[in-house]
Amino acid sequence: MRNRSAGQVAHSTVRPNRETRRQAPIRTFLRTADGIPIDSVYDPGAVVYESSGSDPDTGHSAARDLVFVVAHGFTGDVDRPHVRRVAGVLRGYGAVVTFSFRGHGRSGGRSTVGDKEVLDLAAAVAWARGRGHARVATVGFSMGGSVVLRHAALEPGTVDAVVSVSAPARWYYRGTAPMRRLHWLVTRPEGRLVGRYGLRTRIHHREWDPVPISPTEAVPGIAPTPLLIVHGDRDGYFPLDHPRMLAEAAGDHGELWVAVGMGHAEHAADDALLARIADWAAVKAG
Image (cartoon, rainbow, N blue to C red; front, side):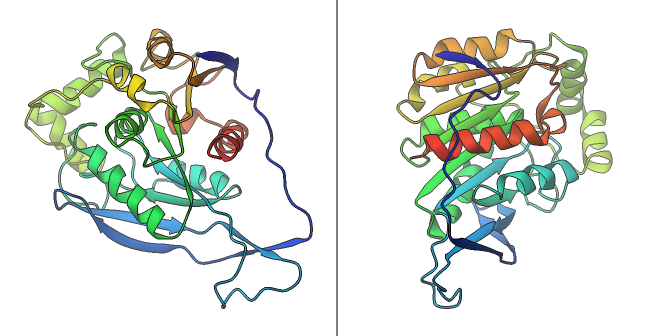
């Protein structure tokens, strides 16, 4: 795997003589393969029209064909300010689909903390394709970062680029205080009550059966789809051995960026880093 500091990417070309206009987002509930309703938002981003005057109502506009599908971290949801901020940066580069994982926000079901959430992402990717986009890039954070890796491996060819930010490499990690607190939240009845009423996250009480393949086990199956792994050197949840394990498993088909001074996931990814991620995906998705 190629190892670069964050930001060393090629830049996409902006064509001159075009006009951009904003269209209203679309909010709806998607249905997963196992029947869970998923609260989702499609933002067309900055729709581009030729300066010769194509009519946005005719359907013949030159809209960007790239769409980002954003997979948030555990206890996030589509309405959280940090998720909306991520979407706001990415829509400068293409359309954006955001959604709440099962058990989060207004979505149905209960969280399985990264297992069945692959079905939620699959429904969002299918919706993005259904909006007419030729290129789909998945961008996941923390739990969502593990989900985009497993989804790309389990459903090869459904996406054109994958970005995993602050993801774990292996399951059941308890090596940091934040992860020990998270395990209490997930495994203890009183923890799940805190999740439901304090964090708007309904967590399933059942343990995984079977245990899903780990992110590290999934990564080799992503090739040849371009893969970017991003991790902060100050991540308080998962130390740097996690992204390095993922990088080793990926081999030469992806890139690893270690972001200096960055903490964990969406809250720690600043707008400049998100813009560089978007630019990388715009180039690598073809």
